[in-house]
Image (cartoon, rainbow, N blue to C red; front, top):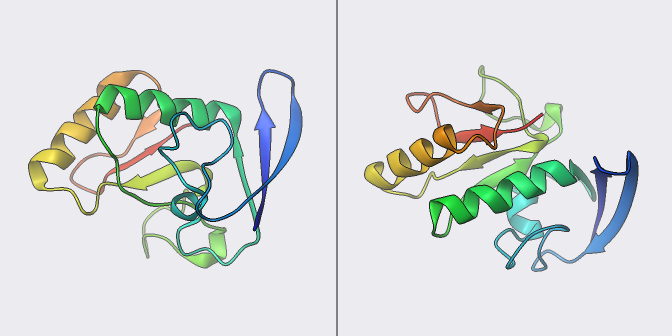
Length: 133
């Protein structure tokens, strides 16, 4: 069971939820993002994100129009990430698409880059990562 802290951007308040690994994340539409996907390999029992980030995920999933495999969206800085590259997974970014074909990854990247829902989309030559801050 994970304790999930969500900053609600509409009310400027933190909200607390308790969810099992197979349950959808709070504010997730159509159960497209389970707690275990959000957590990835993090060992933390406390996860955090924002309502705005979850809404961005919902929009991206709708725009893409199909399942988006998530490697993880949450890691504490000392839990690693992309080795020498950025460590950006503090609950407001998604490492996605590693199991997609090259053409599927390109379509996912294009949909994220053109969506307007993310403040940053990592260049496709680096990795498929979308984030909002």
